[in-house]
Length: 339
Image (cartoon, rainbow, N blue to C red; front, side, top):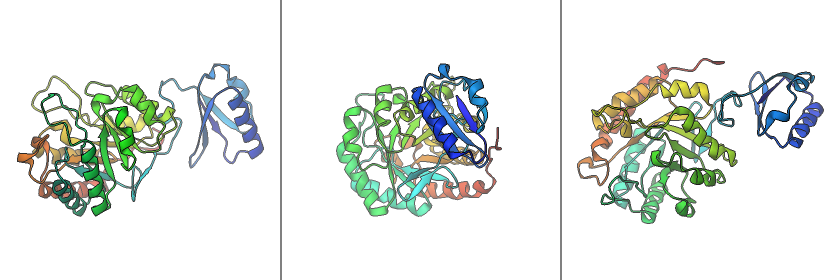
């Protein structure tokens, strides 16, 4: 349920209203927009008398929210969420580019790539220390040592770092990580999401291979219900009958999610296509349709990469992508207000 207040509500009446709602065991999420102040009510709202609420002097309207996701719902939060990350942000007027190797292999490798992507305009560094692999015989990452190397690259470049967590037992190792990534396979690991909801760190959630947008938002809701509202959504392709590409990149998810939620949305064209030469056109398309950023895999020697070399760009190719994307951004689609 959302309560839309009139402009400049009386402070005493507002405090009385919020006290009454809290006595009904409801969680209140106030949002101040340009035109209205909205109180988002989460919990059992069946005891709320809508007619009584509407009759209050400071209340303009009351609406029930049918969607199961509440905190992530744009109806609760009209303005786009902007999430600070180190010396930059995700969402708002900044187009974020998270770039780096699929898997951290050595200090020389990750630091060299970090310096290259920063020079090309990347705003954050990605790198996998813990790697979920389909085969138990494939390279699983350097784990804790990989995190140490990633943080060394951060020290040398100043880039905030993004890396994936696979299990709750690893959480204590992520203290110095700027953004914790929840991979597609863990999108519905609800125990993990609940625990991440108790951290103050930005959480990047990748859409699962066969999950709907509502299911993605419900995963975000798990984190937000724990008190952590710093959630970023990532579209990385879904599994369809098509086999020419690794996955099918659902760019329609960007405008649809923009209508459904206030959370920032980034696109991962590397995992979506699985083919390095396809990253550039898909990155350009993502920028054009209004995404808040990109996540791109970059490797200094893709042919010898221990993980996902076929979809990784060289630093030179990444620089070319950045130039093409920057040319698109001034013409990017903007979601009309009120849609």
